[in-house]
Image (cartoon, rainbow, N blue to C red):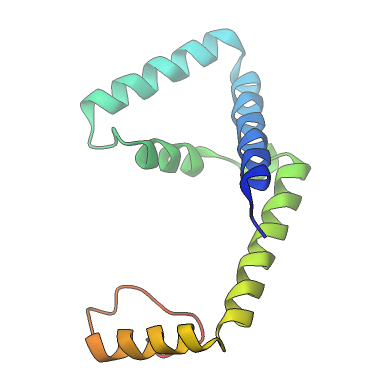
Length: 117
C-alpha cells in the first residue's frame, strides 16, 4: 500500500534524480541556469504550472540518468497499482461504479482497465 511514508520516500528519490541530473549538467552553474530557464519558461509559456514543468523535465530525461533505486521503486509501485486494479475489479462497489460510468456514457476519453469503457 502506498502510505505517507512511501510517498515521502518516493519524493526523496525523485529529488535525488533531480539533483543528480543537475550535477551531470554541470553543477551549480547549470543549476542556476536551469532555475532561471524554468522561471523564464514559467512566465513566457503556458507551461507555468507544476505539472507542465515536471512534464518538460521528464521529456528531457534519459533512461540511463535514472538511478537504479528509483527504477526499482517505480517498478514495484507500477506492479502494485496493476495488482490493486486487478484485485479491486471484482469488488461490488467497483462493479457499481462501472455500471454507472456505462450508463452515463461520455466521450470515451479515459479507459477503465479490464472493461470496454
